[in-house]
Length: 291
Image 1 (cartoon, rainbow, N blue to C red):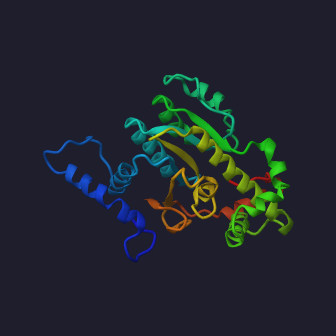
Image 2: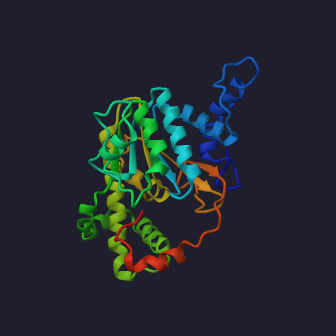
Image 3: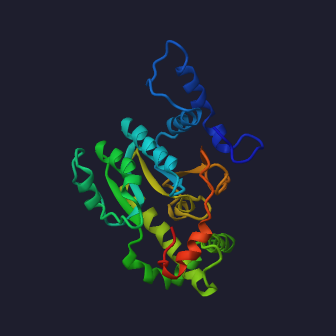
């Protein structure tokens, strides 16, 4: 278990301490175990999941090009589903209104792909197939949460969205959009892009609310910016629909703080990559959307 700051024990570390101790005791010789090989980080994460039983909403934030993050998400789906605790899996990677409801647990990937109207150009199916199919195989519905592309133009023009976040948080979101586009967006396009981000968060929050079940957890898989407690989907969830956000962090990239997430799941650093150079090369063709 790692903390995001090298100071006093973090809130999530304290919250999971009792479950972590129980896990250590279960690992002693003579105690029952799963037999699966787990890293210390996996064990710490499972201890927290055990401690969070009954949490209505759990939001997992990823870096989209980090394969270890999708592995973590698939393992979390399997862990929750095996204990009968998973109400639904909601995805940023599919549009709201799509879902696997009605498909049997033995549905094949092609059927699931079609039911979710998967956009291969935006989200490589093979990267997310293990996450999605783990839920389907467990009989858990998978539902799209993202704002449909047909709604994006209206969202860009919806000034009412500007009032959702406090001014300081709205400025943080605006800066995040600017930084995410490497300063290449014209100033007049920043707020429309912020509104799309806000509308996407609102759409994912509604999908989670629609999927809720008593004593079970709705799991969201999305980019780490969407699960931020201070800016993202949690700000659209009502207070009585308790949520916890966890962010997978590849090395020191996109370092998160406890203000943004209650748990940081560490994964190996990725090879150096100049995303801004790539964006500069395609910016004239870029779609009006933010992941």
